[in-house]
Image 1 (cartoon, one colour):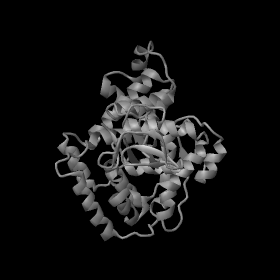
Image 2: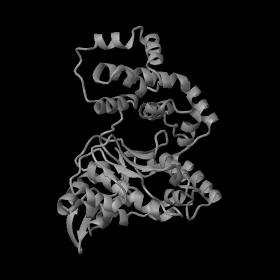
Image 3: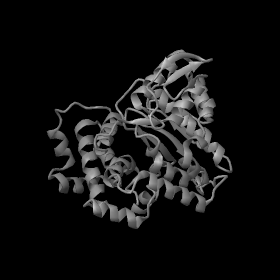
Image 4: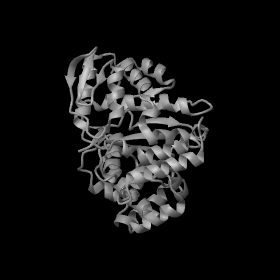
Length: 364
């Protein structure tokens, strides 16, 4: 069963002016007002945490204030070795690479992913659990908590480009923008924070590469030597499916964003029995099929969205892949109901990710 570290639970209850005991009692002024499952090994099961989020949200209807209080309550020092590794990494980018790799030590309900294939780059939150009413509030708390802490540990001041949420705004959007200090967009394609290339290279106040490397070696031991590396191909498909509209990314850039050398990147793909070129082609074919079957995009737009600079080059490649020209393929699929382009893209990303939940939300 997915779990959440107690640090997140304590921060949530503190934000609501409550206290959590190890046996799961929620106290207000010494009085027990709610009960959750007892903490086991410093963890709470995901459903208990989600239900607690809903219960607290009902008691505190001012959602923006609750989000802001959570951001103040959760501190990097509460995250143990991972928090120290993030603060002592040389740059913000290095911190995010560590966050991406080791966050599963704190919870297996979600992952963080740095997407540098778009401009500006995006720190993306991706859920790994079924949908739940509490998840939209979790999204907001998670991004607010990261932004608050990052501004503390980055040395020269951090400016967010913008913040996006997939859900609709339930309060005054201006209050969110005042809190984050940047535009906040709702109804977007993903939950993310946009960061400029300059911001990613900002040094951290406590940056110390030797110390950070020592801490990450400890985190590697915590992950366990017998734990298999997550499949690279699935992660690569997710990244490519949202990056192709700006052209096919260079393998070296993707490898860097995924926290590995280009040599390791190619070796791991080889170990999985594939190549970078094969994965790119697979994503292009699946994305092109979905767009031709279900969207109202023109063929020129489909070519652009699948990484081609020219429609003619896309047409030749597509015919080579499936044995039909794009227009012929679309005509044969014309009885399939059309969906909005955004819905098609989101569905494609989920299928390329192997069915992982992309609607459900993120860790806080």
